[in-house]
Image 1 (tube, helix red, strand yellow):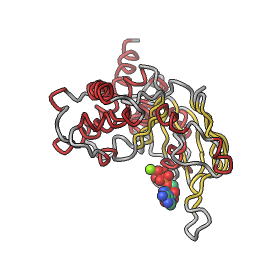
Image 2 (cartoon, protein in one colour):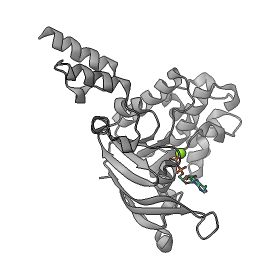
Image 3 (cartoon, protein in one colour):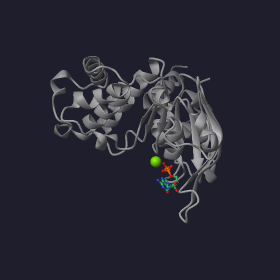
Length: 285
Ligand SMILES: Nc1ncnc2c1ncn2[C@@H]1O[C@H](COP(=O)(O)OP(=O)(O)O)[C@@H](O)[C@H]1O
Ligand SMILES: [Mg+2]
């Protein structure tokens, strides 16, 4: 088991007039090698939650256990000695990470992370080049300024900056937001590849098609609380109105076909090709 969050509470601006509870008793577990999604309305606490998973925010109370690391809440924060190494173990790609590129070339940008972990310039540059290639940025781009790239390319460079730390767990906060379909597909293919290499992927998203298509488990946050944990199929089948989840049209369509007597297996349908295959199989019977 790789991640265990127990009874997490977090308040912004504690003991000020702006005090604001953002996480209310959140507990969850994520297994190693999982590809999970975290969904919920804007303001439900998704970004706050993921910032706890690499120690950027420290809880008011509750505990976070990630492999060999334990992150203690504020009152016991003196015990949080290994947060620096935790940030290498758990890489977080923030929303719109491309705005954080600042070096004059993209290779220097990606090398910045490893150098921060005391890796020598030359080796850091090698690691950076490898990371850039792995996100599909070709060598001819390496010496370019981040500002010469398209939005999708810039985002991939920013993601390479996290990959360069070689984290075992990668968290991405709305990584496809604002990208065109091609850019989105490139990012998702990248995550699939990372997951196949054994990394645990945590995807924060609003896009239920991505949840259905790529993830094996989904957590729903609503108004600071965890209100659902299960597979995407379970989430969409239950159709719980209180969760205000937008059910993917593909899922609704597949269910209608099944209700009309077509013998298909809904739980095997994650994209249009899967549905097509099932319909063909059924026709051959
Ligand atoms: N830096 C901050 N200071 C005060 N309140 C914040 C801050 N960041 C987020 N919040 C509040 O905490 C709640 C959860 O926010 P957030 O975790 O960003 O939600 P989400 O990522 O699901 O949109 C929201 O009500 C938001 O306004
Ligand atoms: Mg957010």
